[in-house]
Length: 574
Image (tube, rainbow, N blue to C red; front, side, top):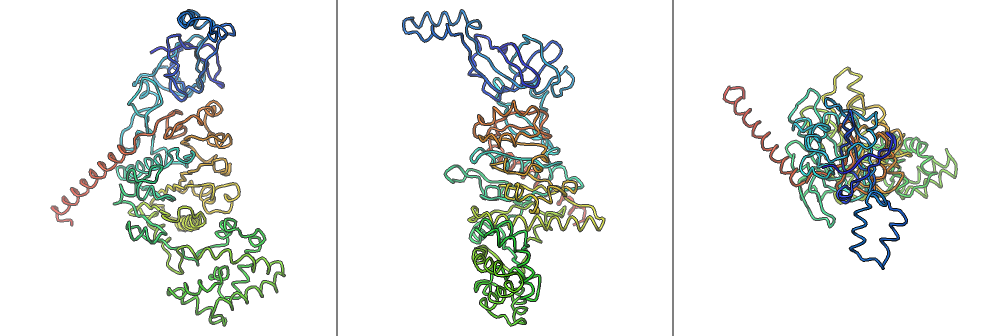
């Protein structure tokens, strides 16, 4: 259906469309796709603004109480387009000569016809899913095209890091589960030489268990349950582990580094002076204890620490090391450490240690242990072509950011160590690891990017096959280097101008799209980058139907495996 004509514009600033008087402007919300018929090319546009204009005389006429509604309506029809007008503004996304489509580098002629897209044109510009490496993600926000969906290329998406940005409640988790499900299917169906393994840090247990509505009621299974045959789920929540069958994850305190403590200490309210002295404290504590590997004991020199040590074989070894130094209780340890600190670094350092160390006792409220390193098993799974995908569910600790940061950093550091080790040995990596990192600014922010293991991964591990899915409500808090590494972005509703500007870095003609981001409704997303052919706004596909599709695919795959096993048995190979 024809809706209007081009009356002005430019490639950089977009085009202005004068709508026909009979066109209902309410049918064309911001974010909708349109077609512009130039003389040589067809242009794909995306509506970025809409409005009405009227002369002062017609405004006074319409607002007059002395003129009947019938006369007002008659005159309004007769002078439409002359004394008043309705208009749209649109960004030029692409153009085609009928054979291929590419980013617009010319302008449609003055008075070019503007109309709605056909379903064939949606397919031409955006392609169609093949259910192997390209999958439908949602319906375009376009009048006249109600069922045709826009596909994303999972193959392209997993080549480089990507971002999912949006306010709380905008639909990030629904989108993340769909994308994760497609990635697992892609790996199962294609079985490439370098397999795909997902590592999902799941703050609210909506990947490992169920997605929830705004009241916390379960809506539908997350990918961890749907693909349970290929996913291993962990949690630091002992109760959740027991009730829902997730593997229990405890932090091995002996694996913590100075960097780990530096990241979480400010959240505990530890002073900057203590943090500045931390490396000196480590060296001094190691001297007192007689073993550098156990320095963390001196950061939490409490009776509870000694009780915890007595509960494991590794802990008993540490107690023996302490006993050799004549240290058999927490008071003796504490006194020796602060006296040694005063002797080596002065009263300022002594005061910082004595006054601040108690704040780190909060570490002992978390599920911690000595010498039981579950992290090794997690990373071995991720790096083996026969291993499982991994989801870390925080359970009741969902608001405990320090615990989340400690677990994530330990895993990230171990991944890097393993990859570097295999590379130095000249071994090929068996897997490509895709890490879904919620609240990513805690690891990749302006203050943390340089000291977090994830910062190292972002800088050094891309070429080794470690891909980050950066998920955040406040993208402006991310380091600029991180944002520049993202090659596909899924931008849901944001309202802060800095967040919008950051989320659109890398988008063609980003300033044109910045108008539409605050107007996106729940589960509407603006997508641009390598995973889609051209920028587009879509309504994320219904999650319940997607889960049904996933489950059907799982059943097909399991049936296929069963047939293969039976065939091998018949041949006597099993």
